[in-house]
Length: 383
Image 1 (cartoon, rainbow, N blue to C red):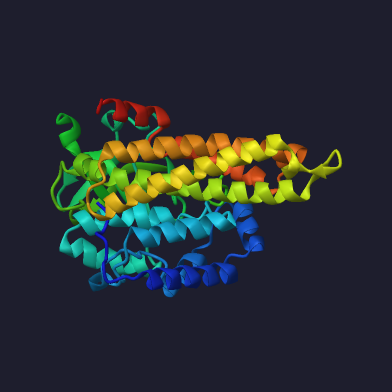
Image 2 (tube, rainbow, N blue to C red):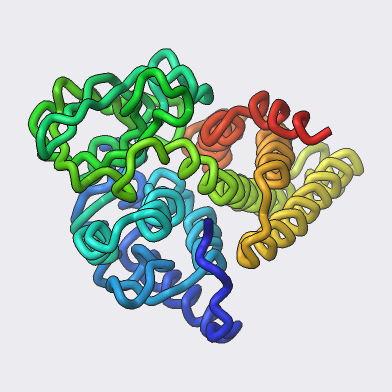
């Protein structure tokens, strides 16, 4: 459930937002700093606070709670500007576009007033914990459970592959509040990073997106106040997740397109400058045909995402179409970026060339938010 199109926001407003964001990133996220984040495997908290002060966090949160009431168009601008700079490792889209909307859409008035202002300011960094060691895309196999204990919930279980896991101050934990009720027994409970019984495992060593802290989380009688049950009523977690997944999957498709377009631009520049057998690589017909095909694919992806975004803003994006967008775009993304790397030859295999990082960073997009295989299952149900 994305915030509806804000008709008061003009194209000039969006251009101004993009320009402002670009200036902020040029100043505070130069390549040397991004390289350090990749080395440290985390973006320092100061950067989150800077982003909050600059107005880049919680951009779709209503003004009444400290935001300024943007919509999905702003999220796409953030994704695209991050993509131009190789900033896929900084979890702002997760914070803004994936987790915060749960609180806006389903939170009680008390929850909104407690959490949303801090989400906007950067004082509260968000994560959502669904995946478990034995349950990835299969939410029905979830084992983490919570029991009511007076004015608290006691949560037990384990989550893994949780983005923003080392940094997050507030984590929406998907868990069973009724073990015998199937999908109707799932709930989302917000766990604070300082909660008793909650601990973080290691910052996982990943193939790509090194700056994105991704963690194991442990709940050993972890305590969360009763008022942290999202929406205030147990058993609504599955429907809440299903409502939000179309936007998440469209967002992943948009991130995949941003990576693909950056890879294509870098490859065209390289092919224009690199000579072989007395001529530029771009003068070879094979190179032209490969890049022409990739450009066509990227353009088709953009039109598809544009159409889905229009539906999302109108409240009409269904789960099947969102699954199609994620499947279509991310599969093209991974395959096309591999072809781009091939044009670089041996240089493409060197970490000093951005195409190598893009190649690694792209691979997760056919996996997280539901694997391509799960997308096919969901799409097949509509046949």
